[in-house]
Length: 148
Image 1 (spheres, rainbow, N blue to C red):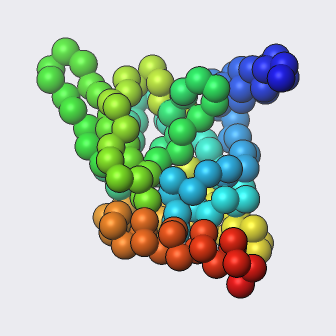
Image 2: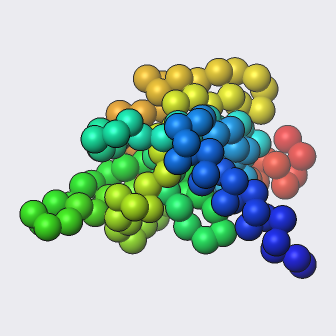
């Protein structure tokens, strides 16, 4: 499969964010279930100059081949550098720490597949129940397989 179109779109997305534009992407995975469901449209805006993300908010960071959209769970500051640790709401563990250069932006809005609009106060700043979310994800997956 030719990855060129995907790489070009990824670079266009990074460029738009760097220019201060809001990016609209479709959620593909289940890692943020139930906060963000697959098929939802996620709006990502770049971080304002000099303003770092805060623990609890949903952020996007750059990873080949695109973006990872997960919740910020920790900020590690050792005096010389700052690292950001994220985790998907239904993931069993944390992601590897990322640098500020890898941060793409914050999620400012989610449109569910049913058309409902969710603003940050409904999905950011909350501590997820990781184990419960994984159970809900398994139930949801099972129901989809059996056609319920």
